[in-house]
Image 1 (cartoon, rainbow, N blue to C red):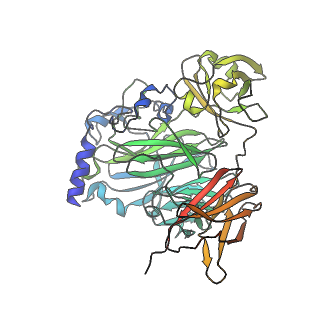
Image 2: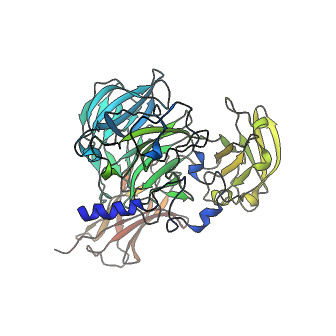
Image 3: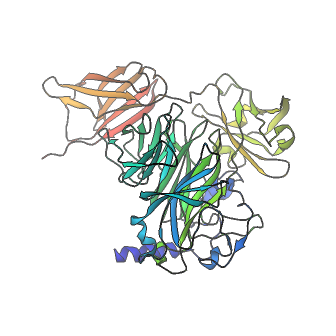
Amino acid sequence: MKQLKTLLTAALLVGAAAPVAGQITERQRPAEWANLVRGGRFMDRFEAMPDGDLRADVWGADSVRPRFVDNGIERPDLSFWGGNILRGDDGRYHLFVCGWPERSEKGHMTWPASTVYHTTSSRPWGPYTIADTIGKGHNPEVYRTDDGHYVLYVIDGRYVSTSLSGPWTYGKFDFDTRDRRVIEGLSNLTFARRSDGSFLMVCRGGGVWVSRDGLAPYRQITERRIYPAVAGEFEDPVVWRDSLQYHLIVNDWLGRIAYYQRSLDGVHWLTEPGEAYAPGVSFHRDGRVEHWFKYERARVLQDAQGRVEQINFAVIDTIKWNDLGGDRHSSKNICLPMNKGLLLEVLNRKPITDKTRTVRLRIRAEKDFHPITDVDVASVRFGCYTEVNYGRGARALRAEADGEDLILTFDAAACAITPEEFAPKLIGSDRRGRLLFGYASLPYVNYRPAILSSMAPRYDSASQRISLTVENFGLSTSAKAHVAIEQGGRTIATASLGRLKPYASTTLNLSLDGAAWDATAPHRVVFSRDGHTLNETEFPGTPKQ
C-alpha cells in the first residue's frame, strides 16, 4: 500500500505546478482536440464565479489564496466533500454534503468516518450553513421521488424522509444484478429521474440500473461499463437528464481529466471530444483563477427544463495524503455557474436524409434572452456534433422572426445529420460575444425509446430447448424484434419477439439450430430489427467443476 501511495503521489505531481484550465498531458489529449472551437468542449460552458470578497487569511496553498470563501461551504474546523443541491419548496437551496473535523489525526483520510450534513442557503452558490446533521455516510446524493419522498444516497446505504428537514430513516437499497456481474462494486452511485418518474442509476464502474420509483429495487441492464473507450482510472460519475437527453460526466482521477457523454436512452452513449472539466475551471470575472489541485464529485443543479445552471465540486488544495490534521490544507465544496444553453427545435417533420434540401431550426425566446436581437446569426454553426465542435457544420442561409422566436434555415447537406442523430448541436455567440450553444429536438425521434434486455439463457437438457426471459426497461412499447443467441462466434438459436409494453416481460422458448449447447462457453443475446442491432448482452459460461 505504501508503494502504491508513493507511485500515485509521484504521478499526480507531474504537471501539478501552476495548473491551467484544460491542462492534461499530451498522452491523454487526442491531437484533434487542438482543433476544437469555443463551445466544442463541455468545459467551455463554465462561467465566472459570482463576485465576492477575496480573503487571504484562510487555510490553503498559495494557489487557492486569496479566494471567495463564501462560495459553496467552507469552515476552518471542518473538511467537506461531495454532495448535491436541490431547490426546495421553501425557495431555499439545500446542499447535502459530508465532512469531518479538520484536526482529525488522519486528515483527509478520515473520510470513511465522515458525517452527512444538511446545509442551506438563500442563493444557489452559497454560502451554505449547516442546518441539521443527518448521520454517518460519505459521497451523498439526494433526489426526490414522484410520491414526495427524499432519498439520500450514501456509500453502502441510504436515508429516506418525506421532508428535507427530516426525520431521516436509514436503510439499504435492494439491487437485482439480473445475471450480470457488478462492475467494480456498488459505490459512488449517481441518479437521474426519467420522464415517467422512474430512476436511472450509474454505479462507479459504469453499469446502468433502473428503479421503477427510486425506492424499489435497482435492476441492472448492462454488463459492461458505458465509459469512454480510453485508458483511465474512472470514478465519480454524475448522470442527469434534461427535457431532451441524458448526460454523463465521469472523472479520470489519476489523469485529472473528466469526459462528457450523451445518450438517447441512458444505455447507449456517445462521447463528445474535449475535457468536461480539468484543474483551473474556477475563475473570477477579472481572470483570477483558484487553482485547486483536485476537482471531484461533480454534481449539477438543473433548471425547469433540466439544463445545468450550476455545477458544484468537492475540491482540495493538495494531494489527499498530504492533507493532515491541523495543517494548512483542507477541502470544501464550491459552486460554479454554467452557461445552460438554448432551447432549440428542428421544425422538419420528416426524417432528414440525403434528399432533404434545408433544415429549419427554432430558437426559443426566454426570460432575459431575445434571440431575434441577441443572436449573432453569422456566428452560428449547426449540425452533427462531430462537425460543429470543430467549426464546421452549416451556416444560416436565412433568418426570420416567429413571434419572439427566431427561425434559422440551413443547408441540410452541410448539417451532416445522420439517421442515428437524436440531438443536433448549435454553436455560436450573441452580439456581445457570449457563447451560445444548444441541442435541438427532432420531431421524428422517439425520446422515450424501448430498451430490450434479457436474463441469461437457460438450457434444459431434457427438452433441448433454451428458455429466455426478456424485459422492456424503456418508456414506450417495443416494436417486433429478432432475437439471436450466439456461442463461439455462431448463431445457435433464433426467435421472433412480439411487442412489449414498458416494464413488461415475456419468456421465449428457443430450439437449437443444429448446434450443441456448451454450458462452459460465453453466450451472447442480440436483439435486432431490420438488420440493425438494438441491444446485445454477453453472459459468461459456467466453469467446469
